[in-house]
Amino acid sequence: MKKIIKKKYKNLIFDLDGVIIDSKENMRVSWQAVQKKFLLMQEFDDYFILIGRPFKEILKKLGIKHKLEEIEEEYKTTSEKNFNLINLYPNVLETLKFFSENSIVMAIVTSKDKDRTKKILADYDFFKLIVSPSENLKGKPNPDQIIFTMDYLNLNSEDCVYIGDTSVDAIAAKASNIDFLYAGWGYGPKPEGEFNLINNFADLKSYIHL
Image 1 (cartoon, rainbow, N blue to C red):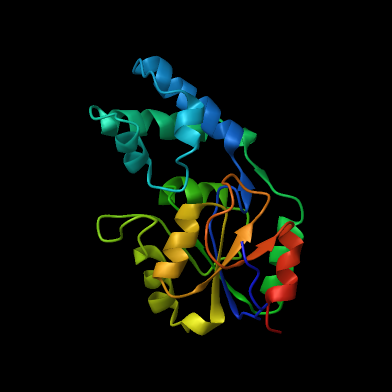
Image 2: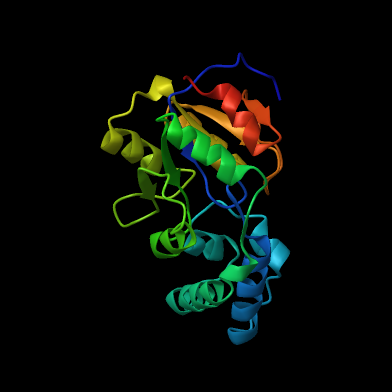
């Protein structure tokens, strides 16, 4: 990984899981529930390595071809019953408050469905927009969600950066023609390409334009 020149940004677009929230145990419990109910042979580690893509896309990559709707519904239901297993990463709340107080525009671009995302973030009213995959917006690594976010909020790509933790995030940012910051505390191994690495959420303060 080659370090690039540090820039200052006015707008921050975040991935959710592995960046703002640690939801791995919630995912594990949810996957084990669908694994048991639908007699799936794929283990949690097989699922987790593909995190970052829309849920049904992950199922397809795992070779699961049937009952996709039922599996997704069971996963979501179990996930919501176990929201107590989800935690913010260190320094997230304080840093988001700082950004909000300094009029930094923030948005969420996630592969998690919008209903669960809104419930998880219900107490954190920092984000101008939450964008999940839909019929009209392909999920990551496609750039649709990020491009939609910039267009909807009327943001200049030069002033934006996407903060993610997987290669899927890095690919989506590059395809959207915006910079990428790799969250080193997250779930994925370092992606290929040129970008800067941050090891603590509070490190983002050095990347914003005040």
